[in-house]
Image (cartoon, rainbow, N blue to C red; front, side):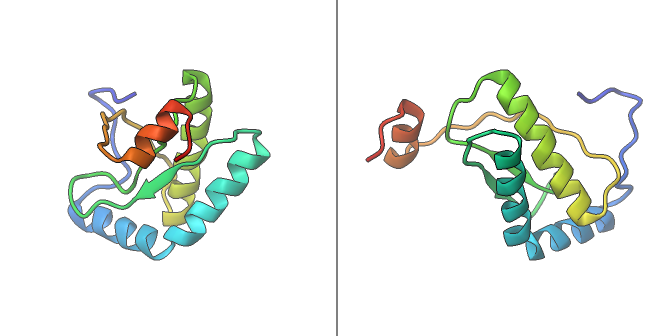
Amino acid sequence: MDTPDERDDLTDDDDVTRCRARARNLLTEITRQVRQALDDAGISLDVFVMIPSSGNAIATFGTAADPADEVWDRASKIIASIVGESVGLTRTRCREVACASTGEAILALQEGTPR
C-alpha cells in the first residue's frame, strides 16, 4: 500500500523509461520465471504481464481468473519480486487497478467454461 511519505526507488522519467526498456527486452524470460515460481508455490494461475508506454508503472499484470484474495496476494508478491529483480529494483509495490473485458474467451475463463 502506498503511504504519503513513501519514496520511490525511481527518481525520474529516465529511470522509469530505462526499467521499462529492460522489462520489455526480458518479457519472455520474466513470464517464464513467473510461471515457474507460481508452480513452485503451488499456485495454479495463468497471468499476463504488460509493459506500459506511459505513466509511472514498470509493468502491469493480471489474470482472467478470479482467485481468492490470499492467493492473488501471494501471486502478486511473487510477480512483483520477479519483475523488480529483472529490472534491477530493490523495492517494488503493487496497486490495484480495475479491469473488464468484452472478449468471449476472457469471459468464458471467468465463468470457468472453456470455449
